[in-house]
Length: 468
Image 1 (cartoon, rainbow, N blue to C red):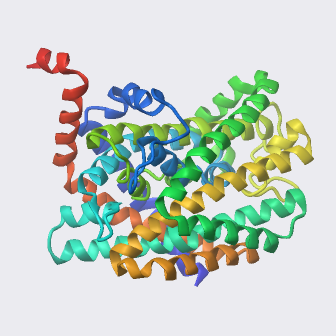
Image 2 (spheres, helix red, strand yellow; image 1 turned 180 degrees about the vertical axis):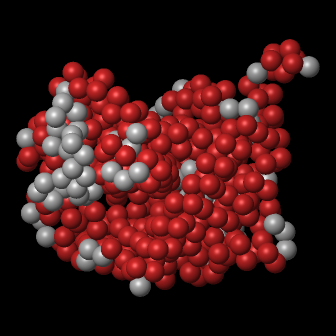
Image 3 (cartoon, rainbow, N blue to C red; image 1 turned 120 degrees about the horizontal axis):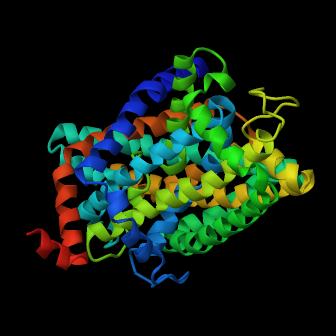
């Protein structure tokens, strides 16, 4: 079973995914005339202009900031720590360059996703706002085909986010807490189940209230300590950037094999891990952006771009710079391309070793464990919400409690067993989500362009006059 799933994943990841994600990102970059550059300032102003960690209470939706933090909670998970480490170990430091490229184009993709999620959202029977790709997929392809595609997406999302994904996250929490503080992972599992259960039952409001506080705090802590490492390693910074750029184009020097094989490895690692890190094009974050209370879809679109920016260009890049400056630069442990390195370096402990290399083993372990706890915990909350929206789309309101119960079982199981199959199945369902989502994004280009025009008219009335 494992080998079959791995084979499908390798094919999807190396060929279909790279094409679809780069394709849709390029497409929207051109069609919106570089919205990620033109409207980036507006996105930052909307996100941080009236920054407050107390969102205004909305009965059934979220503030724009809460929607962003819920989206970032989903994006900044183990993908940023474990994913970046995995990409560097398998694809060399150059994989990070390709993650940047994918994120730059991904900002245009996520703009389109958030705009469409806002435009197609609706109220459910109990009067709560709900939305996500299932609604714009049925808009893009009216009739039976669209319904089937939406159902396929919903099922993949429930499995990827609600079940397998949360299992992967709780597994990472259990493993790092055991390594750092010698707390048995089953104890961590029981604590997680109790806390998550209480929050899940509280619904959208409870999740928004937690993520809007946890996400800024965890990002600040991680950035603070990460910048501390970089200050102490300041003389290796030019070399670190040099390694990222050099190995993006000459990966064979560090991965081995021919240039074609090495480039494919670096690129597909960058794209695959980039997808799990920033989730642009996957169709997960639109569930959060649909719930934001904003005047027009464009307003949440520009905020969504900031999410991808923070995720990849700030958090992930900082982690990558720490790893590369400590482990590769200046004759580091992995400098000579010893891919897996001595003493069993793997994607789960690479970051701990890098922080530990500067601040000492005990601190490195503890710090990464605490960050992973917050990162993965907030991801579980967001992913559970996204899965639940799709469970309700497929099975109606009555599915809420059975869904929550099952999700908690998976969270507990994650802390009990390390299973490669679960990681691979989680990867597979994530990759399957991309296909119907990206098809709908291509089909609805005109709608996104219309909303962009409307949004720009409001922001730059003078420009509009000038153009006409």
